[in-house]
Structure formats: structure tokens, C-alpha cells
Image 1 (cartoon, rainbow, N blue to C red):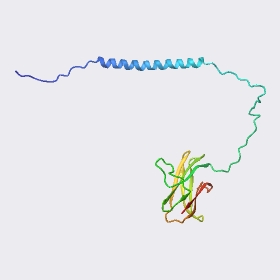
Image 2 (cartoon, rainbow, N blue to C red):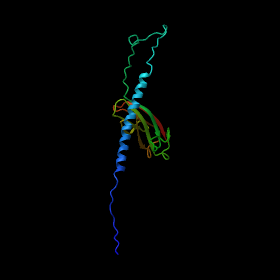
Image 3 (cartoon, rainbow, N blue to C red):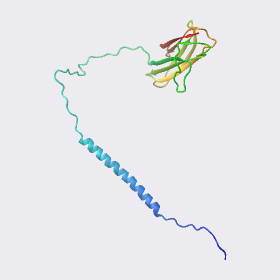
Image 4 (cartoon, rainbow, N blue to C red):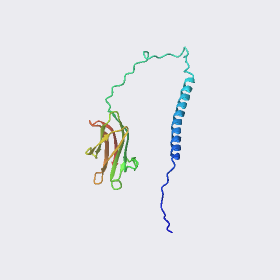
Length: 189
């Protein structure tokens, strides 16, 4: 006798799919219904709230109206649209873009690179500032232009002071037209 083994595909019942579709439809329409009920209850609660109460001032309190208010004229401002919020000289910039320290004196052998870290705000974007590095005697070593594209804008520049002269150095933050916004002195020895 010969045995034959085989596979016969049986029809899958359709009712589980039907039940799933009906449950999804009930959830969907039930969700819409519950949202509309919540909306009705919210609007009903808003309508049932008491209105604003009227407050009367005592007769001794002076009443200031816009016509009676003194006219305040803004002072004419020739100031720049850029404001320097932070100016720090540092030996390094950390991973989270902050100064590692605040330097006032720098040893050439210990710290060959000096960073100027600034945080500035500008009314007009985009804008531009320049870090001007001055050596002793006022000689300009570098003028580094930096873009200001956000409020506040964080930027930094650096110079290598190895092989440079010891003495009183300065870094200035200037606008495009050369207006000095801030400056910081440091000693190199």
C-alpha cells in the first residue's frame, strides 16, 4: 500500500477579519463621539462661568488716561544695533561651546593659543562683528570677521601667541563700520 503525503490548503475563516474591522470602526466612531461630548461639556462649562466683575476705583485714586499721560520721547540713539552680552578670553572652548576659563594674563609657554569668546545680540539679522587682536604698541595682529545670524549669537576667534611679544595685549569687538562695542585687555608674559 502506498501512502501519499501532501498539503491541502484549507480556506481561512473570514469572520475574524470582519470582527476586527467592526471593532476598529467602533473605536474610530466612538472616539469621534467622545471628542464631541468633551467639546460640548467644555463649551457648556465656559458658558456657565461667571462673567467679569466690575471694579470701581476709590475717588481718591487718580485716573490716568492716554491723553493725560506725559509724553515720553525715546532718546536719540546713535548706538549700534549689536549688543555684546559676554566677552571672555579663554585658553580653550569646551565641548558644549563655553569658555573653559577666564584669562587676564597668559604665559606664552603654557597657553600658546588664546580664544576670544563672545555672545552678542543684534536687532538686525544677519549682521557681522569683527574680533580685532592688538599686540603691544597697538599693532593689529588679526581682524577676524564673524557672522551674527541668531539672537543671541555665540562665536569665538583665536590667535597663536607663541613667538609673539610679551606685554599688554587687547582684543576689541567691532561693528562693520569700525565702532568698538567692547574690549578686553590681557597681559602676555
